[in-house]
Amino acid sequence: DAMVIQNPRYQVTQFGKPVTLSCSQTLNHNVMYWYQQKSSQAPKLLFHYYDKDFNNEADTPDNFQSRRPNTSFCFLDIRSPGLGDAAMYLCATSRVGSTNEKLFFGSGTQLSVL
Amino acid sequence: AQSVTQPDIHITVSEGASLELRCNYSYGATPYLFWYVQSPGQGLQLLLKYFSGDTLVQGIKGFEAEFKRSQSSFNLRKPSVHWSDAAEYFCAVGARSGANNLFFGTGTRLTVIP
Image (cartoon, rainbow over all chains, first blue to last red; front, side, top):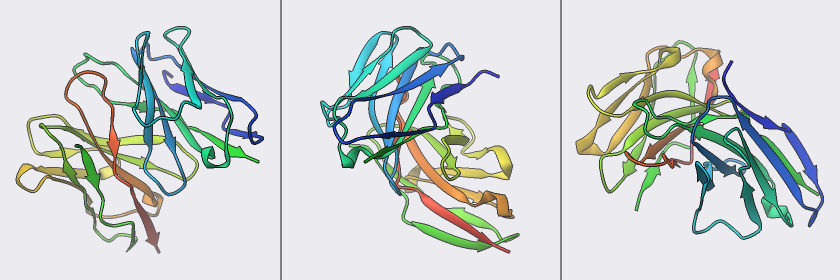
């Protein structure tokens, strides 16, 4: 089935140790998003790629970076994770310009920072 | 500025009872409106969406929502709740053009008691 796949489901890292979360999609959607969701809070958009164009939200910390090497894959890099970065990270995709636009979400990666 | 308010943090209903989850939004233009459901440790699943047309929209799992422009509301309803409906529910608004960056409410946690 076409879907959005996030790996790993659970990621543990150490304070200050770089970590990369991955997302892949088989939907051939032109937009990919990364959301951060802290415990008992709403998902918050970090950034998105519209094709190859990177769009950063104004309040996204510099500690967070992203790469989209091709249509199917998108990575979230956290250069120096802090305790406050522990959260669920959700990847989503959409096809802008379609008549039935909506976001498809992956199952998320739960990041723990020790 | 856009915002979404879900005034009820936690709702408990008995199985078989009716359900209404409230959502109010503030948006500079006519928005796209969405309801998502999230089970523990999972990503978000789209229940239903409103783009245009009939203001009463039907979704999956027996849910419906009504868009009321005069009240800036998009409340979610279900006539008879099942135990499997226990989850977190998020209302969201999105732009009508371009990459559909969703702004989420803080969610309502639904508990279903036998």
